[in-house]
Image (cartoon, rainbow over all chains, first blue to last red; front, side, top):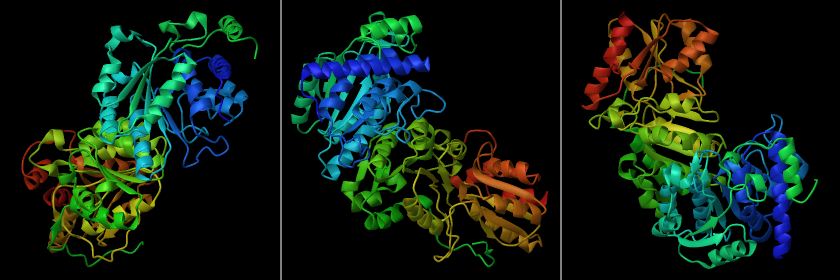
Length: 275
Length: 317
């Protein structure tokens, strides 16, 4: 069942954020900042855009998603759990020794995960491979790949960008989660990947700039991407790291840290009350 | 499979295993549409161009971008395809190591990495292109099967066989043309080494281009009344423990020889088995923790001690 109403998608995104919080809080580790920044994008994909079947995760004709910024697995897991691939309660086992919810996504352990990721820069290549096969086998599935704005400092991303363009992968849509922060500081300070849009444009992509927290803009961008022919699309989503939990917003310190009990309670409150 | 090959004579004809690989790709490509081939701007050298000519729509030249090539192959494999990715060994196992580790081996994807131009037998290109650490790097990866073939017959069989088994495989291939060793009807099995000769004076464990060198050494030593056996270790992982222990029990001396650094490769793999199961002295011949250099392949084999002379000298010591 696809959700089409904006307000319902906003509610769903909030649920996804609650799941991210539960996962990271219970694990006492993980990456909340970047998970929260891509939560709206992933929510739109999993609840409005992607053609998937939670009862048949390996369905051959499904749309695929590669979370190349694999450390933001809490966002992916929370979407999958809310979608019904597994129980929401399981999010609390994130990073636990007995859990299948690894720190970074593992396609063999978690239903709904289409590609193992974690070592940054590798996901777009795999997404290209899926998109090439889709074209070769005349399937009409689409492939989505979520990159971080720090991640695109990895050279392999640009090797893969050339490949996407060479093979005219109009069934591929890349999203750059442009929250402007990486572990050691801002993107500009550490190793600027700007201008991101000009770079992808020059690599042969159709580029769309959006506010990555505006549900309507996100939907419209994915809809536009579907109509583009002969080239891949890259959506540059301007986002806020830590979005939705006030003290985490735009704070580089919340890249890879779990909240303590007091902070957790504040976050629960901000995300709409107790779970 | 446990039979010993006795009357083996090296054939007159020489062929590089990369050539056998390219030819076989076409054969298996005819039988199975799911076989896709990737290269990184070296199709003429790795011989994947033979496949490219026959099946252009199933051939992907990824440019000089080995990391992306491995990642794309991984993506193919998630969709049920059987990708064969080729480039020189140094750019596959070396440059794209992390992609092989994290995008292929950890998710246990059905990607076949067939790397040519291993060892000092690359020749004139010199150290930057002579991969001497790939067996070491690849055999340490969980889920990976590591194979290093010695001749045309074996390579052809192996390329077809790895297309049928599930999971990541690293196949090590050579640039240098070496004698054909086996008859066309020779039987092989992944993980089962091949014993050539029944001599008990020494066992020479060899792999890749050093197998024919070991057979030459065996023939020359026979004239002097020294009887050795050669064991073709075409599978480096999983290693044939039974064969290693059997030879340790039956022969007076154990020697390994590889066109690879003696650290981490065939010799190390054998030493690991011996240490745990049947402690025996083993002499490791190969490149001794150094980089290669430019020169003619045959001259380099002599220079680095990966030829028949090195074996003969060691057996006689």
